[in-house]
Amino acid sequence: MGNPKQKWTKEEEEALRKGVAKHGTGKWKDIQRDPEFNKFLFSRSNIDLKDKWRNVTGGGSGQGQRDKSRAKTKALVEAAPSIQAPVPNASSVDEVMAEAAVDASAKVVDETKIVPRHDDDLISEALSNLNDPKGSEVGAIFNYIEKCHEVSQSFRRQLRTRLKRLVVLGKLEEEHEDTRPRAPQTTGVAIFGETLDDAAIACAYRIAEAENKAFIAAEAVKEAERLAKMAEDTESIYQFTREILERCSGDEITLLA
DNA sequence: CTAGGGTTAATA
DNA sequence: TATTAACCCTAG
Image 1 (spheres, rainbow, N blue to C red):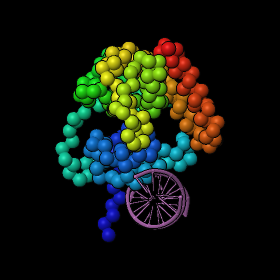
Image 2 (image 1 turned 135 degrees about the horizontal axis):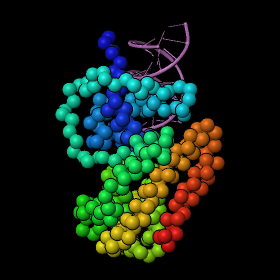
Image 3 (image 1 turned 90 degrees about the horizontal axis):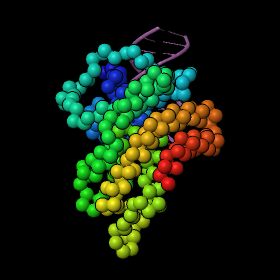
Image 4 (image 1 turned 90 degrees about the vertical axis):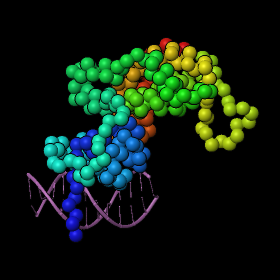
């Protein structure tokens, strides 16, 4: 019977791209469940996201590459519930990356978008927002920053490494819940106390520089991912990617030490 | 739940 | 007719 194949709109496609750039390929359910993306993807299912992403991507040549000039359409298919913008969501790393992929030297100005305000405020605000009396776990902190800043996976790894590095160095105090580690449910939930707030400020500055380098690293990762599909050599690519990340973050680690 | 394959509708 | 894009089904 009536099956008018609803075409994807710009909002939906953009939301999908953003969701993938945020969480990464896969996790379609998470993207669909996300309140921010659910506004546009509320009528789409996780399978639809995957299918659409399959068409939108593909490696660069061959198939996929769905037309990019086709919006106008009707948009807002089912009387969507007033589209509001509760979240600031101003910076778009993926957008910058995409632009940079074509011409990086011309889009250097967008760099300010990645680092719009002070860096110390980043973690400070995260702690304030989380409002944790004992402190916030490292996961929640980076998660908050990730949501506010839309960082890429490359940066995510660097941030995590940085925080862990500080713990090892002794700058941060790792406080356990109490006696005995209870159950092995968590992969190492480290709750930081007040010391984090102090060290976070210093760490934030490093993060600022990290973001800048992460931007460059992201391009390298993107290239590596492309090669991965062509060569399908995970092992070689893994080392290649690792070298690039290490090379880009090598300077940062030195600063941290 | 995700990945892949196959089918159907619309288009060049 | 061939190709693309959405939709649906199945396997892991």
